[in-house]
Image 1 (cartoon, rainbow, N blue to C red):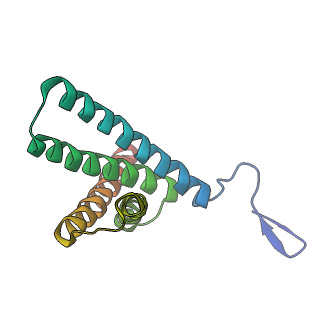
Image 2 (image 1 turned 90 degrees about the vertical axis):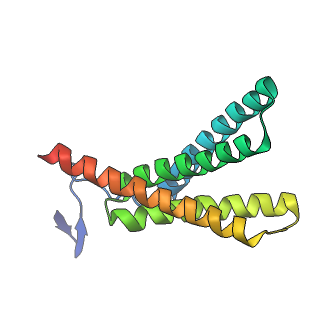
Length: 142
């Protein structure tokens, strides 16, 4: 750290904080990219195999979990903070945007049990991603 004119200034070699809005947007874009790829795979499976609706529902749940996990994993690495809170925040942001988009498309017709289940899945999988990211970081330090 250098002190110039009464201000602390980071030297060029020191890490700058990464917890900006742009970092969150990048992570959310990755999460929605994963969601898009998974939904594309599900649509091909539905088209080719003509599966039942229950199999597609399971696929959508897996999509929520995988996207939340990836967001929590990346969020913890970006924020370098509390792994559980960072992961939960990324899962909640994912859920919030998902709710807004589908709410606008569906006319905000909300089925409460499904709404709560999706919220829990997104937040919990984000938390799990943050926890595993933290464990990987600690294992590499040893």
